[in-house]
Image (tube, rainbow, N blue to C red; front, side, top):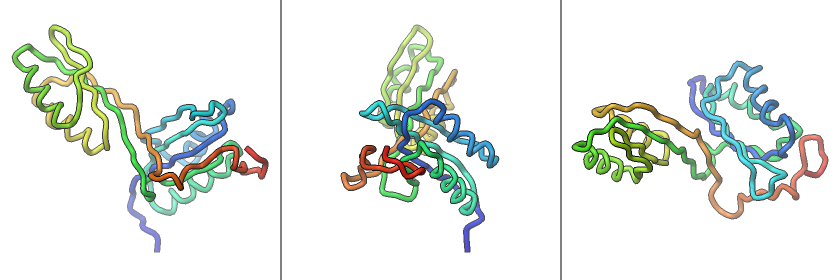
Length: 181
């Protein structure tokens, strides 16, 4: 029996870097009525290919269907669920705070606990950069609530499967249509 509770799926894809691939992938989610929590993409070492990471929530059945639909897109060479594999995932967050000189050392101490670093300081503000799992980032934001948080920017999830045996070489793959990448 499938689990009907909603949970998070982290889909990592290796895709051909063709015009419109981002639109085609996000369109599958949109047509199925999914709200994307995070969507990140960038060229790989070979600019002919991109790595895209999508974070989405839903029940097991719906998430399984969306993964199957995305894998049918011709540009998608490989897709995996990083939440179910042995993987490393991270997000980057920038937090801007209103800070008076007497509070700077306290904020720096809190930031250091989370391996964050101060990347900008003005007379009345600081920007902290921190990366990690979403729970870690939220814990830092929670601790900084005692100060005035002015803005937060977050990159969204990126990730890779662990180990060298999981490396996928695009030139060795075949597209959904059966042609060599």
